[in-house]
Length: 194
Image 1 (cartoon, helix red, strand yellow):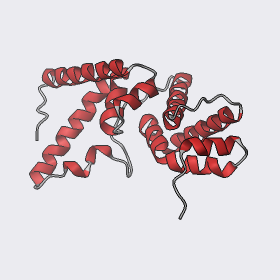
Image 2 (cartoon, rainbow, N blue to C red):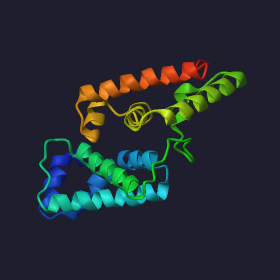
Image 3 (cartoon, helix red, strand yellow):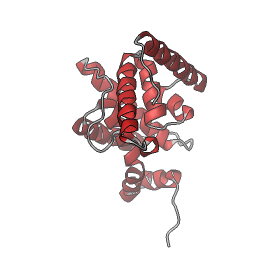
Image 4 (cartoon, rainbow, N blue to C red):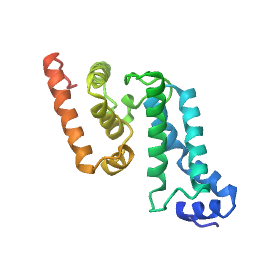
């Protein structure tokens, strides 16, 4: 039985000429990186393109010696993916709003939120639709924090590394996002309980 090989060791093996090591790294981190891109750009084909671009950049950076291994390989990859997504939106000035996820990744219908009756299900769906609509109104930085923290289940440390801010800044943005969500809900007289 083969033991677990760390990202650090796989990076070293890849740099030393073993391309199979990169296959393992990609396989290990594909789901997290791809889900982030898909949720961010709301387009599966575009997410696939950005995912490939991300790992082309990763491979080139590793080959050129532009990566300093501090035990945060996946955070580094996520930052590259994040920056490529931002570059895509800037190029086309094609900022997309967070909308109902289509397909199998509907994070708003998590099994942990399952209800016991049809009325509860309808009430929950109505609340979730209202929440989705008010998240769209948040400023971009706050919206991104809400998405990463609540829907992608990222830690504040991961968010801080990905967005290149301090943990305190990430926490502050989340705090303001929650304040704004409450304020918007009150202004629209929304009852967000079910």
